[in-house]
Structures are given as C-alpha cells and as structure tokens.
Image (cartoon, helix red, strand yellow):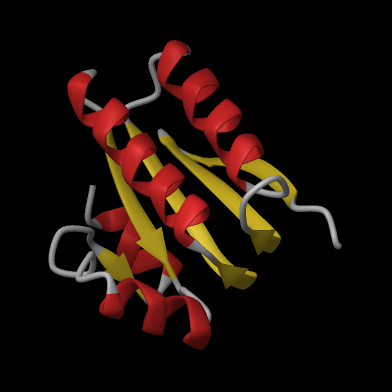
Length: 114
C-alpha cells in the first residue's frame, strides 16, 4: 500500500496542496484531515487541492474532502479542486459532488478564481 504524499506551497495568498498517491481509508484520508485542520487553524482563506496525482479515492477520501470543505467554510475559507485524475473525477461525479465543489483544469485559472 503506497503512502500518500502531500506538498504544500504558496502562490500569493493561495495555498496549493499537492496530493499524490491513494486517498483512501488508512492511507491518505487522515493525512488530508490533518493538513486541512492545520491550514484552517493557521487562518488561510484560499485553499486549492491539487488532485492530479491522486491515483484512487474511496469513500473515506471523499469524506475527508467534504469534511475539509465544510470545516473551511465555517471559518470563511474557500476550498477548490484542481485537475482531478480521470478515475478521481469519475468518483466525484458518481457521488454528485462536482456541482458542489468548484473544479479547475488550469492552476492559473483556479488561483484567479478566488
């Protein structure tokens, strides 16, 4: 089971969270929760989750994306998604989350949207 890798970078006042690996129960879900909690606690207001290198997402991973989005919203933080891999995008469509979450294919466009 491959570990989830997370890199956090800044572009202006936007935090980009680059996720790589499996966003599944016991692998990436807890790591994403910790990162989101930390960013919200640090009062970041613009978070972009880059899902391009996420190889698979399960219900636990989806749950953490939604939980992070809801947590952020309670503190006035916007969370948007960047370039979900095809299999991740299919899962987001199946769970009917794409109408709720803003998704962008271009990083510059996503940053400008905040």
